[in-house]
Image (tube, rainbow, N blue to C red; front, side):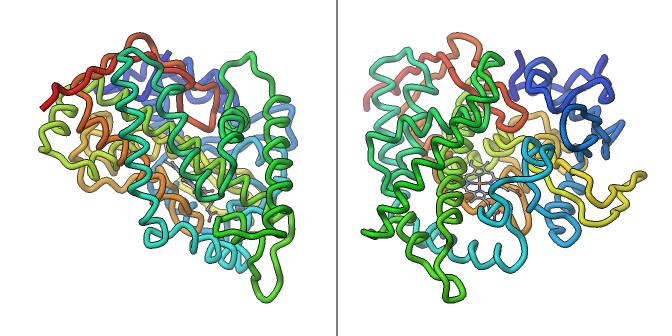
Amino acid sequence: MTTHTQTTEPDVTDIDPAQLDLTDPQTFLDVDPHAMWRQFREQSPVHWQSVSGTRMPGFWAISKYADVVDIYRDNKRFTSERGNVLATLLQGEDSASRKMLAVTDGARHREIRNLMLKSFSPRVLQPVVEGVHRRTRDLVEQALEHGQLDFVTDVADHIPINTIGDLMDIPAADRERLVEWNTQTLSRHSSEDSALDEVMARNEILLYFSELAAERRKNPGEDVISTLATATVGGAPLAEDEIVFNCYSLILGGDESSRMSSIGGLIAFSENPEQWRKLKTGEVGADSATEEVMRWTTPAMHFGRRALEDVPLRDRVIKAGDVVTLWNSSANFDEDVFTDPYVFDIARNPNKHVAFGHGPHFCLGAFLGRVHVNAMVEALRERVAEIRLDGPPQRLYSNFVHGYSGLPVTLTAEAAG
Ligand code: HEM
């Protein structure tokens, strides 16, 4: 099992990009990701991966930082409207196309994004920040009382879902179910969970929000669902499926990635005692550490686009209609951009990672995501003296989310006073 936690140069012997299957989640468990992506960047930065059994003959895998950023920025020649993750892109379409922000382009994207930004701007979210810090401190305190625990299920699982749950005014009793559906939709705990479970979980979430949205339309409150359910754009209300798909994207985006970065951050500190010391002594601040945790963990491994015209790139030509995948987990370790990329360095500056994407679809929840990771970094710094991993982290089975379903740890409290 591999994690994103090594600090030495990756060993690239025996890795041949042509032999790897990026559609298979098992690849990401079997192969050291740093070694794998280094080989891609060096040998085949614009790599064609053929696939069978899907509507598309294959797809491009882009691994250099400069190319990833250029394509993220270019929504004229590359569209998100035919899907933005490998799973939907290979089906040839996304059923939420032009209904959900992330898979809408052009004027409609700008209008809906501006509407949603009203609920997610730093100014509007300022009152939520203290609540996130309080909840995180409380959970870390409780964890310290137990000493030994599963950091995923006992701590991390309870934080972002409750923030986004409060913002959307989701009844507390429903939140645990939503976390479970979220994980099943984006990734699987193991190869034994079926693809059908993924589809069913997605449908459960959509159905859940369709009922909640109908209720909020009748009795609106101050929450984000009510904002979407009662807003008008260009004089017309949003269609019901637009409301439902955007709620779906908020609950997925709002929960899973923030959880995974916090968990990955804890692992990184446990394996890099010198960085832990720098954090604890205040030699490096929590904001800088948060950015490095984001780069280091890169929870959204890839996003993707469909080319609208022929685009020459390095020595290849991406043809109109081709699927293009942008590997954040490679770009964030590109030697041309990051000095000593395989070193977890919480003082890293500059640190222009693409964990939140780039360009017109740059993560709407980046501020909130950072708040969550920052709150965890602060809570660990203030209350925890020592982090010890009691076993290997259990990795998710996914080619999209880099994360964990279990992490046995022992946390030791800071001596009183
Ligand atoms: C978009 C990552 C937290 C909601 C994105 C994109 C990335 C990303 C890479 C770009 C997708 C693309 O270009 O196709 C992350 C990470 C997070 C995080 C790593 C946490 C650590 C959040 C949160 C929310 C959220 C907390 C919701 C409150 C969204 C939405 C979009 C998006 C709605 C689509 C934006 C658009 O298309 O204009 N996210 N995200 N994300 N994210 Fe996040």
